[in-house]
Amino acid sequence: DQQVKQNSPSLSVQEGRISILNCDYTNSMFDYFLWYKKYPAEGPTFLISISSIKDKNEDGRFTVFLNKSAKHLSLHIVPSQPGDSAVYFCAASANQAGTALIFGKGTTLSVSS
Amino acid sequence: DVKVTQSSRYLVKRTGEKVFLECVQDMDHENMFWYRQDPGLGLRLIYFSYDVKMKEKGDIPEGYSVSREKKERFSLILESASTNQTSMYLCASSYPTSGGHKQYFGPGTRLTVT
Image (spheres, one colour):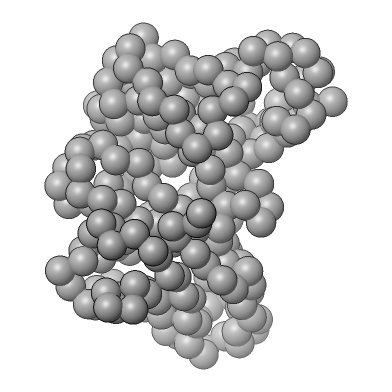
């Protein structure tokens, strides 16, 4: 059973517009959420994270929103740029030392110019 | 600058061969992980290790084993490679903190088993 779900396999957005990537989770013990970005033939790179005690975290063009009651988080990219085209993975963890991350299946974002 | 390196970017092996994938991190991290990434399946955890000589099974350990003799090195072993093990293999490391478990990934090894 998938604990972290990214229900949209792909998303296409025009340059300059907002990209919204969604992620749902089922495990109420998760207390930390991360977004990773992956280009083809490269390893994932950390993008932004949020603790469950917050509902928003912002870093430049990237903002993550967390709705604990709905067990839902989203990543907003504003404005979107062609270089943002990549696969985005949502991940979650429970607050234990060394706990492995649980990843979603990813959403492929394509930003056209 | 943090760094996780993997021994090969691309590897082609024959069915039945024993395959070693090496991962080295220079951040003195306690935790190390091996994932495989397949289209439509995301990142799936194969094995992880909390410390030297310690290992834990992930979600898909069948057909794999691991070795961690030194803190900085974590090896993934395919005892007898099969075609369904053709995949992108990703190594990661992290430091156990209470503030989330940010993992640093290597560049990946694209393994093809023919």
